[in-house]
Amino acid sequence: MHFDLTETQQLIRQTARDFSVKELEPGAGERERKGQFPKDLLKKMAELGLMGVNVPEQFGGVEAGVVAYSLAMMEVARACGSTAVTMSVTNMVAEIICKFGTESQKQAHVPKLTSGEYVAGAFALSEPGCGSDPASMRTTAKRTDKGWVLNGTKQFITSGEYAGVSVVWARTGGPGGKGISAFLMPADTQGLEIGPEEKKMGLRASNTVSMILEDALLPIDALLGEENRGFRIALTALDGGRIGVSSQAVGIAQAALNAALDYAKERHTFGKPIGEHQAIGWMLADSATELEAARLLILQAAYLKEQGRAFTRQASMAKVFSTEAANRICARAFQIHGGYGYVEDYPVERFLRDARVTTIYEGTSEIQRLVIARDLLRN
Ligand code: CAA
Image (tube, rainbow, N blue to C red; front, side):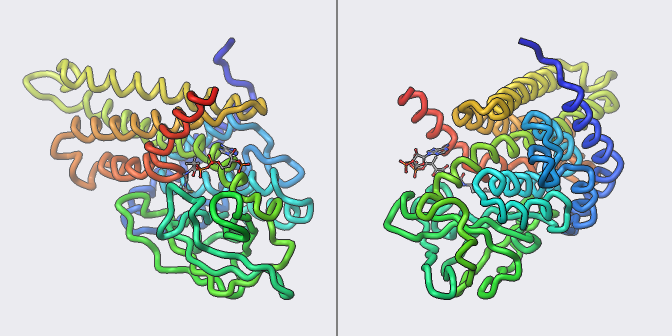
C-alpha cells in the first residue's frame, strides 16, 4: 500500500491549484456577495479539462480517474465553493451520460459539457415534496405519438438556469423506485420554464432554481437507459456525486484552516500570538487531524470507484464525515477570528456559510447514515 500520487494525479491537482489561486480565489468573495455566476471562469476550467476529469478522452474528457477528479475538486473548492459545486454537478452529469447513454446521446452532449460549449450540466431529481426520498417523486412522463410529455416541478436544481442539458427523472410506471425513468433534457425544451433563483445562505455565486415542466416535450430517444430503470441511474450517480461534494467540503475546510493558521500567527493577546495559547492550538490541531482523516476517507472511496469496485458505503462514510468535519473546522476558524470572523473583511464567514449545505445536498448526513447502516446490516 502506498499513498503517493501518480504523475497524472499530481499534474491535474497542480493544474487545478494554479488556476484556482490565479483566477478563482481573487474574486471569490465579491462574486459570492453579488451572486455572480462565474460563466467565463467555467469556460476556462473546461478548457483545462476540469469539466471532464473522469470522462473518456473520446468525449473530450481527460480520463484522469476519480482520485484526480477529487484532488482537482479540493483545489477548486479551496478557492471558491460556488464554482466547485457547479463543477461537481457538471462532471457528474457528463459521467452519467457516458455510463448509461447511447452512443448518439454521448456524442450529442458529453463533448459540449467537457468543452464548455454548455456552461454546465444539471441533475434534476429533487422535487418540492421529495429530496431525501426521490422514489416518491410526482413528476410524470407519458409516452405519446409526439414523444415524451413531462409534467411536474423539480426543486433546488444546481445550475438549472445555465445547463445545456439536464438529466431529469420522472415517473413512467407504478409507485416507488421501479416506476421511474431518466431523460436528457436540453435547455431549449418546449414546456420547460426556469423558476426564480433561490436566495441562499451561502454558495451565492452558484445557481439554484426550480424547473417547471408543463407538457415539456422530449423526443423518444431522450430516454436515458431503460424505461422504469432510471432510479438506479440516480443512485449510481449519487454515489459518485458524494465523492465530489465531500471533496468540495474538504477544499472549503482547508481554506478555513489556512485562514485560521494565518490569523493565529499574526494576532497577539496576553503578549504572544494566539496560536501559542493552548485553547487555540488544540482547535488548530483538531481541525488539521479531522481534515486529514476526511481526505483519506474520500480518496479511499475515489480509489475504489476508479478500480470499478463497490464504493457505496465508503462514499457515504466519506460524505458524512468530511461534510460534518468541514462544518466543525469552519466554525473553529470563525471562532479563532473572534469579532473579525463575523465581518466580511475576512473570508471565514463565507467559508462557514458555504460549508453548511454540504451536509444537506447530494444526500443529507441522515441519508448517508441510513445507507451505511443498511450496508452494514446486509453485508
Ligand atoms: N447504486 C445503484 N443501485 C442502488 C444503490 C446504489 N448505491 N442503492 C440502491 N440501489 C438499487 C436497489 O438495489 C434497488 O434496486 P431494485 O429496484 O432493482 O430492487 C433500487 O436501487 C432502490 O433501492 P432502495 O430500495 O434502497 O431505495 P430507497 O427508495 O429505499 O432509497 C436512498 C434509497 C439511499 C435513501 C435514496 O433514496 C437516497 O439516496 N436518497 C437521497 C437522495 C439524494 O441524495 N438527493 C440529492 C439530490 S441531488 C443534489 O443534491 C445535487 C446538487 O445539487 C449538489
